[in-house]
Structures are given as C-alpha cells and as structure tokens.
Length: 207
Length: 207
Image (tube, rainbow over all chains, first blue to last red; front, side, top):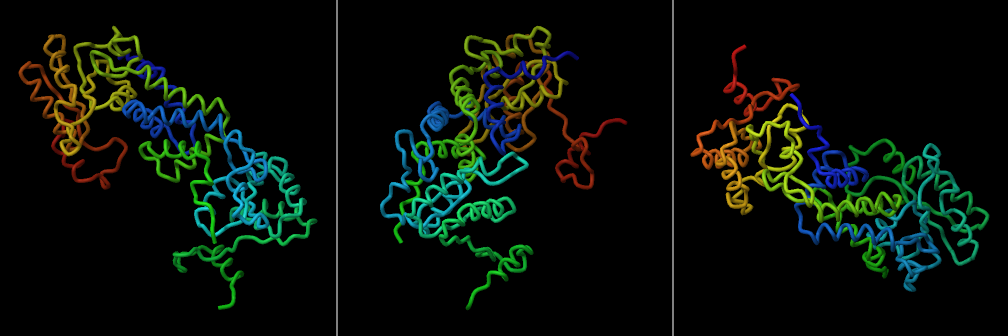
C-alpha cells in the first residue's frame, strides 16, 4: 500500500534539528529524535537559552594567549593566568581543557597550566605541529618556570605526547615530573587490571 | 593552599552552555561538559546550524489543527492530513509524535492519525483535559471515520489512556481496535517475560 515517505511526515525544521543533534558526539539517531522533540515541548526560554549559549560560545570564547585555556573575547589572559595567587613557576601540561577542569576540581594544584590542545595521534593526522608545543617551549625559555608536571592521559597516546613534550623541553634543564600511577583510590585490588597493578608495584614508596 | 574556585576557571559563556546542555533529558553533567567542549572545537557552521535549528523549531513548528501532528507555521494541516492518497476513514490514535513517526517507518499504515499529546498520568497532573480528547471526539462526530485504532503504549498508563479514549468514543458506535500484543518478532521465547507470553497466549490465532 502506498504511504508517504518518512521525510514528509517530519517537518523540514524538525528534521534539521534532529540532524544537528545527531552530529553531536555520543548522540545517536534515537537520542537526537528525543532531544529534538524535547526542544519542541520545553518552554521557549529554555530552548532559546541553549541556542544563544551555542552562538555565544562560538563568538566569544577564545584561547588564552599564554596557556591556551579558554577565555572570553576581549581578554588576552585567562582567569588562571591573571590570578596572582597562583604559583607561576609551577607549570602543569595537559592535553585539553577538560583535563584542566578535572585537575582544578581537586583543589590540590595552585600552579598554572599549559593546554596542548590535543595529543599525538598520527592515525588521525595529529602530529607535533598540531599541538601548542612551540608556545610552551617559548614560555619555558622565558625562565619563570621552576617545575613542569606532565599530566597527559595514562594511555599510549598520552604517554607518547608526554615523551614528545619532555624531549622538546629537555634543553631547558628544568625538572620535569609526571603524575603518579597506581591503584585507583577507592577501588579493590582484586579487580585492578594488570597495568594498574604493575604501575602500583613500580611506583611503590616507603611506608 | 588557596586556589581559585572552579567557576572562575570556566568562562561564563562556557558555563551557560554546559548548563543549557545539562537541562536536556538524558544528558548528565559529564555529557553536558563534553558537548559544550565539542561545540567550542567543532566548525562554526556546524554549531550555528544547531543553534539555528533550535530557534527555528521554537518559532516555526506548530500543531496540525486536525490531528495535532507537527506542521510548520503557515500551514494549518500537516503533510499527512493533506495527503489525498491516505485513507481518511482509518484513524490511528497515538500518544505522541514520536509514536506516529515509529508507525510511519513501518510503511504498513496508510490511514491518518490523531496525536493525544500525552498519556494519562495523574501523578504528574496529566488528566483527560490535558489530552486532545475533545478535538478527537469532534473529529469522529463529523462522520468520516470508519475505524479507530488505539495505538497507545503497552503499559499501565498507555492502557488507561486507551480505555479513556474508548469510553469517550463509545457513543459514536464506530469499530475501535487496538494494536496486537504478543511475542516480539525476532526475540526468543525462552527469554520473553511473563506479560509478553500471557499476551501471546491470550491473543493466539488460527494457524
């Protein structure tokens, strides 16, 4: 029996909205449909707040000229680089902004950061030139940095990125450290994977 | 040691974007953060397409005056109601637009729909008055409908909604049917739950 094709049962606007949601990472076709229908049903101001926030983010968010963390248009330095209470001699190198935010949430670091804006991933075409490695080297060359903490992700790509950074910064002869690895706090030893246990053994310290 | 509070490490714009994503259904704090950072990283046109689609959806999408399916501003009837190839005497009653879309995807229904815009849910304050029950009754009273198919969800709320609709439409003395229930096609009998098996037994038909 003849029925209209699916596309004609969706209005064009709704279809565009579903497609736009579907392009977001981790949002499948079903979720995109659910989100699009939520937008139709929710109060106008809630939906428009999201639209406005997206536009604002694209228009107003810039990178800090020093550390490449996020800052707003019109501000060359981010709030962390501007903060005189922070230790400008202790530099923590992270892959991306979200790593910085995770570290900040711990409230246990009072130094400053450098965001590489990525990690080495040759298969995805991300080499040293795609990272903010040279600005980092220039920053270290300026002489204010006392210690560099490599806080890349504990995986293959993160490790090779750390190695790259360490090699590039070696000529400056400044102490370079990396984050400790071992048992995850709160986890159970019997369920720890081999890598975690090896790290925990290799990194054991005096009791 | 004194560190800046978390909020000052996020720009206000990014914070607003993360909050706006976090208000969507099924998007937790972590996902909202991931989506917000995706928006910052993705090409401008991709992000702005989403913002525009949201605005358009709120501005342009309306309900069809006949069946309450979605239609665009300036069109009183939806594409299904306008389609002369569809059987205007066969009326399928669904709870929400997404149910209609799921049925349309099967390509096995060539009649028209009526969207109730919800289901009975007294605990959430949704009673008969919140549904499009009276417009449905008026539509049936007009005399064009030959059969009414109740396609509410196969659960408690869907069943009570179906009962409500059936009671309201009983005076018109038009055949009312409901969707079949039984084993899910492609499933395995041994893993079917009790309700599914009971339905399959009760609804058994001649071989």
